[in-house]
Length: 324
Image 1 (cartoon, one colour):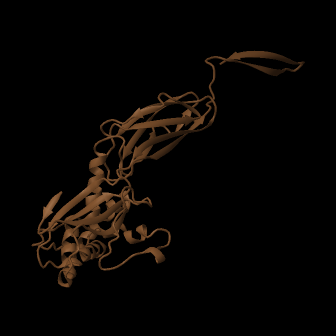
Image 2 (cartoon, rainbow, N blue to C red):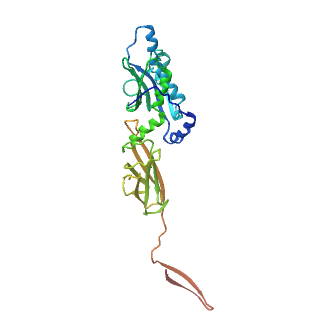
Image 3 (spheres, rainbow, N blue to C red):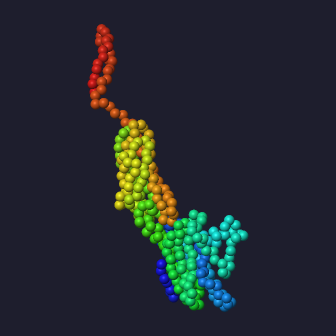
């Protein structure tokens, strides 16, 4: 957790930076981010003058939203969701609550809806209040990052919210850094893996053996080492039903074609866990090999010919035997 001061305002050239995220966003996919309000844990004052200032604690979340939605350089890689609609239940028109002192804060435990991440703040403290802005996984509520910012007297809430949001971003970079660190711990974690099967030969004779290269990369190009891959085949047999990738994310398995002409199919499956989830997902790959029956001749075989001999007086037939 980082502690920041609001004395310096972050200035970013959003338009210039946004294209830098395009490729990773395309390869590793967008992320859902649910935006919740601040939970204010400071007692409500009684005087009208103090109540006006107190309401600024709630307004800070508007500055956070403003920055993430409009200024964060990686915003095009994020699908933003309004947490207010999630807490409103099945009838948002009836149950959605708004107001200067109402906050749509995340529920305890898992945030329903299958979303990836949430952002919310907590304001606490007495004479020296602070804002703790947090990014967490939506389903497991694991901390991604957080920052603590002092709230000085007379702070401007919108600008302070923008500064707070800038300190946890670019938000897609922060999210991907979290996912990569978790992935790099090893099995079973992966972000968006891709399995590839490459047979050494595209065509085999019946009962012939070849090798199949297995490789696995994550969406950012990192080879996934020491990951178990399950293999199945039709039209032939595999030397192993499973392999484990080496330090370069590669493995090799032998395949022997069957005795019948067919199109053999080899399938690979990798069960993994996404960094945001507590259950497994599956990635797979397939390859095909044509199996043909070749014409084989014995080393020696006998052919019999019937020949007709024409002479002046007679015609006779005889058989000759030739060995080839």
